[in-house]
Image (cartoon, rainbow, N blue to C red; front, side, top):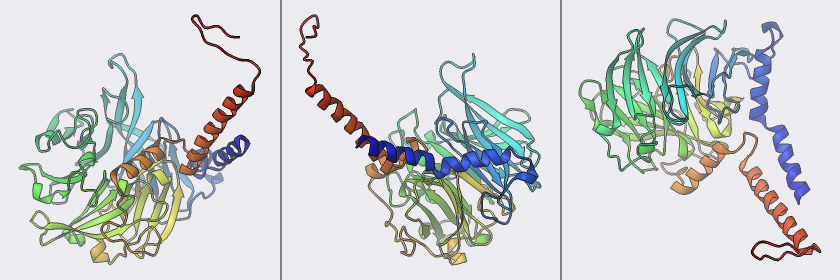
Amino acid sequence: MVVLCAGILGYSYATTSAGGAVSTYQQQADLPDDERTSVAEPRENVTVIAGHGQNGESAALVAFAPSGEVLYYDDSFHGYFDVDPVEGESRTVEYVAERNYAGDDCDGPCTISAVERVNLTTGEVTPIYSQVIPQDRGANWHDVDRLDDSRLLVGDIFRDEVYVVNTTTGLTEWEWTAKTDFPLSGGGTYPADWAHLNDVERLPDGRYMFSLRNQDQVVFVDPETGLQSDWTLGAEDEYGVLYEQHNPDYVPESHGGPSAIVADSLNDRIVEYQRVNGSDGDGGEWKQSWVWSDDEMKWPRDADRLPNGNTLIADTNAHRVVEVNESGDVVWRANTYAPYDVERLGTGDESAGGRSAESADLRSRGPNDSEELNDTATVAGYTPRKVTNSLAFVLPLWMSYADAAVAVLLAVSLLTWAVVEYRNASVSVSFRWPVRFE
C-alpha cells in the first residue's frame, strides 16, 4: 500500500499540467524571440493572464502573442491580481501585484501592494503607485482602476474601503468605507477580513461598482450621494444569488444592459444578472439571464465578455483560462497556476466591448456540458463548497482532491505499519517515574 500510494503521488507530481505549463512559459520567455514556439492555440490579439499563486509558488504574469507564443513573463511578485489595458497603447498594461515586506518601518509581517505599468514587447516596467500594508497577505489590493492620467480608484481590503488617489500629489481626493453602510456583524471576522472588498469599477454614468466578497454582494455607489441600496445585487448569505464573488463587470444599456457578469466563485459558475424594469441609474430589479459552468470549474474569479460574444474566464482552482463561445462550447484554453484575472487586449477593458447575454442570445450551460442550468443548479451548501475550494487553494499545485485522499491513505498506512512493527517487536516498554525502558 505504501509503495502504491507513493507511486501515485509521484506520478501526479511529475505530470501536473499547470505547473509544467508555468515552467514552460518561463523557459520560453528566456529564449530569443525567433526561437520561441507556440505554447497556446493562436488567438486574435494578445491575451494577458495574472496568476495569484500561493506562498509565491508559480505566481506569474504571462502574456501570449496572437500566434500562441509567450510574449512576456514575470514572476518577481508573490501574486498578481487585476490587469488592465492602457488606453492608446496596443501592448502595454497596468497590473496590481503584491510581495512580502519586512522593512524597519513595519512591525511584524507586512505586504507591499503595487500598481505597475509594463510594455509587453520591450519589458520596460514603470512603477505607478504602492503602499506598505501592515498585515500579511490577504489584506492586499485586488483591484485598482485608472480614472485619468493622475488618479486611481483603489480597492483597499485592509481598510474595507475605496479611495481615489492622485498619484502626482499623493493626496486622497475621495473615499467610501463599507463600515458606514453595512453592519459589522455580517461578512467575515472584523477587523481581520471583514468585507474583503475585491473589485472596483467606474461605470460609464460616473457611478462606482464594488464587490464585497464576504457580504455576497455587488454594490453601487454614487460618488456624490453614496450607496444606492436599491441597486445592490445579492444579499448576506443568500448563496443562490452570489456566493463570495469576484470581479463583477458592468454592461451598460448601450450594450444591451444594464447587466452584471460575475465570477460566482464558491458556486463554481459564471453568472449574469439583467436589470429589468429599469435603466442605467434608474430603478428596477436584478434577474438572472445567463449562467455557465462545466465539470472542471472550481472557484472562478474573472469573466470578460468579448465583442464577438465569447466569454473569457479565469478558473482559479482548475488552473486554467478558457474562452467560451455563444453556444457555451470551450473554444480556447491555456493552463496556468491559479489565474486570478485575464485580459484580451484590443477588446476594451474587461467587458467594455461586450454585450449582455440577453441581447447576444447566449446559451446557458451546466456541468454536463449540454445541460442548461436553472437558478440553483450549481449551488451547494455553505460548508462543503467552502471547505473543498479552500482545500484546493492550499494544496500543492500538483495535488488534486484524489491525490489528497491518497496522501491521507499513505499516512494511515505508514502509521499502521509502525504500530504493527512495534507490537511485534521483542523490545517491551514500561513507564515509571522517571521513565525507564526495559
